[in-house]
Amino acid sequence: MAPSAQEEVGGASGALVVGLCALVCLAAVVVTAWLSDDAFISFRCAINLVEGRGFTFNPGVRAQAFTNPLWTLLFAGAYAFTGEVYYTAIGLSLITVAAALFGLSRGASSWQGAALALTLLTLSRAFVEHSTSGLETGMSCALLALWASRREADGPTPWLAVSLLLLNRMDLALIVAPTMAMWLWTRRHTPRAAAAAVGLGLAPFALWELFAVVYYGFPFPNTAYAKLGGGVEAAQLWASGLFYLLNTLRLDPVTGVGLLFGPIAALTVGARRDRWLAVGALLYVVYVLRVGGDFMSGRLFVPPLFVAASLLSRLPQPTLATQSLISVVVLGALAPWRPFVESGIRPGEALKKESDRAIFLDANQITDERGYYFQSTALITATRGEPMPRRALVAKGEALRRQVERGGGGRHVAVRNALGLQGWAAGPSVHLVDTFGLADPLLARLPAARFWRVGHVERVVPEGYIETLRTGKNRLTDKDLAEYYERLSLVVSGPLWSGARLKEILRFNVGGNDALIHAEVYKRPPTQTLALSALSEPLALTSGGVALSLDAPSHAAAIVVEMSCEWTTQSGQLLLQLGDKVVGRLKLESDDCEGAPQRLTVPAEASDRGFDQLILRPTAISGLSLVRLELIDGAGP
Image (cartoon, rainbow, N blue to C red):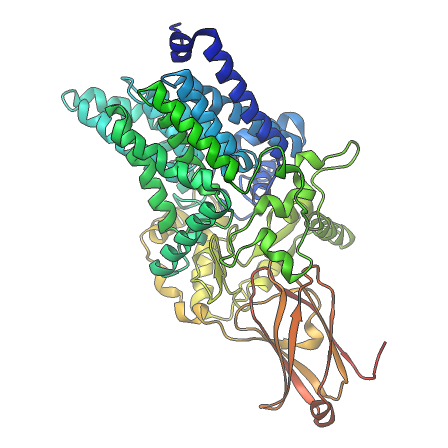
């Protein structure tokens, strides 16, 4: 085997420096290791696959609730061997990160360049924090390193690497597209051989797509339809993407600067072979801005950052690499985040008061996700004998599981806004419906309601839908939507090989059923209506609010309102009506996101006149559910 570039240029001392830099970077990832709530969506799908319930989130409904088939399949294989989730996921992440760092170091043109790239990644908050998290990011970097090392080879090898990348995350095609287009151009004189290489290399991805269409009924993940198909205006997405970039520049300047520094350096002084890779990295950054970024701070910038680091590692002059290394270290010293220091002091846990929101959540709903989940899923907080992860969401999922067990089994349907930890803890007997539609094929295809957060496009749960899922009979009150659901159910729950299902798959994928959805009804949802006495379990709130009717006028002196939430505070307005006339207005405002009840005093005039309807209009609805509303006749405790 030929010696690496570091061995040729720097000898043993250069290799030692590179090795130490790689170990420091890996140590930062270990100290910062954690798991996100979203990762447990993929984990539940993998567990269902291993235990024979299908490759889906809710058994019986074939919906691809994950964007990372290769990573999810890898986890499924490991889980089948270990039977454990938490340490299995973190262990796999660390293995893929180590492979990525090794591949990057081997591809460097000098030991100085390798040291520069590894230092950049170590000081990047986005890279260090999202290399674990239970998602596919670390594996994406490892596959990018593999592809970069083979991208100029003849035959199917580079295309096989592309195929693996697409299986891990389909949008990574943008990074490799310019380079592979040039690969085809340089081999235009042998079209038959080039076509054979492409066909053989892309065969794994093509087989997966064939499986996805036959099994799920659609070529793209359900999450893609949920996040990108809500009808959010392009201008809003561009603005959100810009805020996402600004958030990264503010909290993680090493990542923000590195995203541009690496490609620009490659385009100006780099080798010609690297310029198309630089174009691909910049193209991916533009794509991230176009789709509105993500709710996890910095996460989507990790793949292009890794490519940028790889480009810097191949700078043609070791002196230039050394000067750049000094600049990166200085920038890291000025940055607000410190590896090995801040990674162990996050306060974690749910927000307790409004002033704490800035710790985890900025004004544009971009989250320090690891900070929020630190105390419950970070490796550094694990103690012997205590199960991981530990969190209120796990307890809520376990409560759902116990409720099913007490009821004698069978299907139980619950509406939730956080699917991961709750879904994993609840188990397969609980059918979870989330208003973001990530795992629900019907809600994913409805337009967005007025309130939305990037990556979490809020939908209205159609009237009769929950009853439909509980009973197995179509109880949707919207007749056209009921017909749409019947056709969709045939695709996602019907016999795989029926001729009627295959025809319906074709009709859905060419938009033949779209006219059955009346977009305006779901973009501007009406107020939900039900009797107060019928409020027996948490009700997910939509932007239209909820109207609760009373059997007879009430003269209550106070009202107790209990809501649960994930990110939003319990804020809004409660209108008291007698007939069509508003007789009182109460303000809901609490910084407690743990669901502590609010006691509201009814205005004397409203209490004297009486009221027969309560209309709750929430200020924000992301993760907000009405748990209980109780009328207090006397002064009360």
